[in-house]
Length: 343
Ligand SMILES: [Zn+2]
Image 1 (cartoon, rainbow, N blue to C red):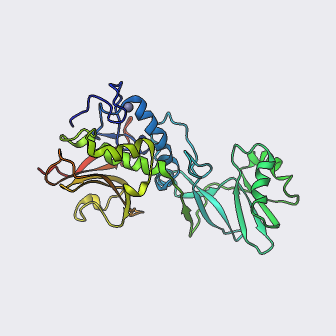
Image 2: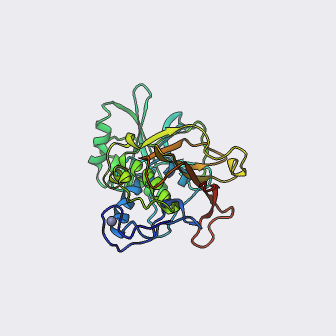
Image 3: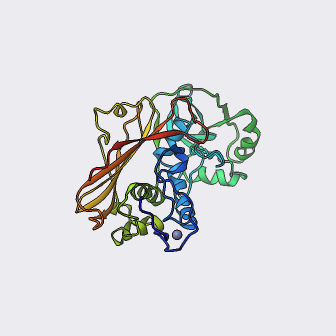
């Protein structure tokens, strides 16, 4: 890479810290190309806050739980099925409770391919329709829960409560004001459900994070651009301050990696990041948690129109591959180049 000696976002002369294009919450990958200078500590920290939404609220948050990818151990573990993050709501993962025949909220037991009930109450109206409502750790008074029941505008016929045995007393204290004659049910670990549907909702911060991955990957791998070039002004502004994601982001179906490559049928999920350029445009493509269980959409990130310092056509790409037997020291996996530099 050719490093910028000043921060490409704020123009300061540092201090800098090593920046990894792929968010750390996906794990640290040996030999992955980093940015040494060019993004100052302050800007890196600000962008990192937007990244919380990517790590904790979107499809990637779901698969981090599914595969038990915890990222930096020092980060407090947040349960994305219980609460949202950085402006996005919690993940809704719904399926019918086989014993009760009503639809409730579930969460994944990380890395186990099993589920358990989210701590919740389920209001069932006189027509049998079920309305699950999370009971979060922050709900310390019953009016907050009651307000959520009232806003449904239904007359409850039954209310089911799902909580771990040690939480029942606390949840009970919240529910008594709402209804008496509540039916209790406590969660059992290690269940499997069929036909579960996950709904994630993300906002601008999620798209800023994705776009950051694309631009920073280009900077980390390019020996021609630093990211400070004027052609990247709009994308830098979007990453730093937000804006309309549709200008930069598009979803596509398909597979980035060559179908003949052994990595096209990975036994464990991989992340793929590329950059591609022509005289008319510079773009990044990304697929996260591409693997045996899931063929994710391709995120196409438009980074700039043609950039004068990137003449001709070219492409670069890496696959981020998790180690088969879990992390080795601080590394979750390593990388392999999937598209070789073309001049
Ligand atoms: Zn800066």
